[in-house]
Amino acid sequence: MHYWVPGIENRNRTDPAGAYGTDRMAYFDDTKLDLRRRVKRFTADTAWSENPPTRQFHLVANVEVYPADGEDELIVHSVVTVHRGRYEGAGDVLYARREDRLRRVDRRLLLARRRVVLGHSTLPSKNLNTFL
Image (tube, rainbow, N blue to C red):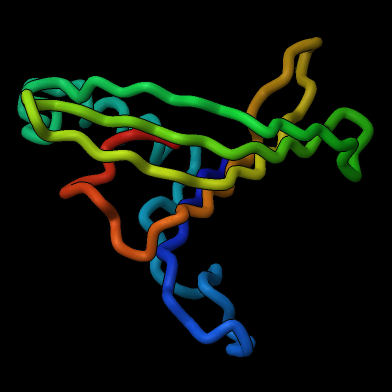
């Protein structure tokens, strides 16, 4: 499993470096072990970013499914909108494009890789404590 959410840079569209890259900053660049650690930390009593708990709603749309190189793999493109709220008036909305690689294992589809490209170059929230 690889979960990657790169930081987005505002660059001229003719810049060959593009808005993001694997050699630059990422909000998440995690393996399965890293993700397990994050979940454990988010659910700990000492997780200040989750006190009060985040109320979140995910809307996934424009889902497109394609066969991948491997016989037991699929590529799934989608867009996601996430609304997050914690306090009475505090809330933010995140927009992103996702590309997932699903792998069939024992007749189940498992997420093998997720790339999330945010629609924001500056996060509209103080933290990113949600999975997109």
